[in-house]
Length: 265
Image 1 (cartoon, rainbow, N blue to C red):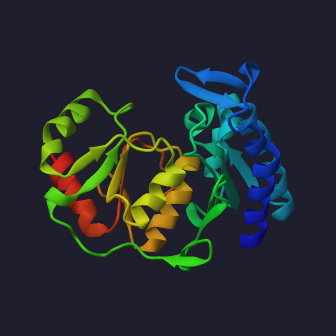
Image 2: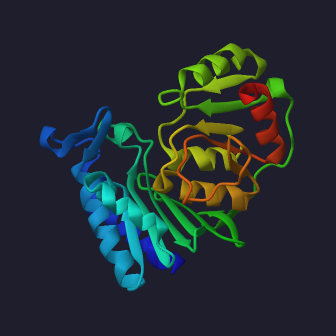
């Protein structure tokens, strides 16, 4: 199954995404909600991926970002007890529209509320990040293991996505930012952000919105690499919980340090 989904993502990339990169027409881009874009690439890729996943597991249910955006009731599929596929056909759509290379195509398989497999494809680099529950995290066939060291607070570097943060939390983090090495604006693409944490390019990322299709793939990948992904109250991440507020970190010690330095009252 791992190889089947990988090839499906590559096929969708070749058919729907890569031909439109830096070649979008005005009619290819629509604002589906204020500040949220969707393109013809998103929609076609989701259609291809959805059809392929249903063929792979005929009794499964698919929850795609664009289907959920078009019909709110589709979100009810998140409570499905059987095999559930989560699909983000083009994570980082704003980057894609701007002609920037930071975008990804993501799929996660959820079973009884737990993510059991994940795929994140960087179409431009043809690089695939894969994780299986209990089977580790892998990038292009190489095992990924996050650093288990705990750097000093002053050495921490990480992304904070401020756009959706409550004002009080945004102000608090701004006032405390000097306590760590750098607060970065983020890549606007979870499919790149989670691997960046796992490989040590940064130590953490703080997200406010926690849509399942955005975070289930990367959360499993980072967790299997040795990182920690949890709600701001410390509860471990599960895709069926879409409450706002999510902190992803290189390891448990980094998670606790970031929570203490930036987030605690």
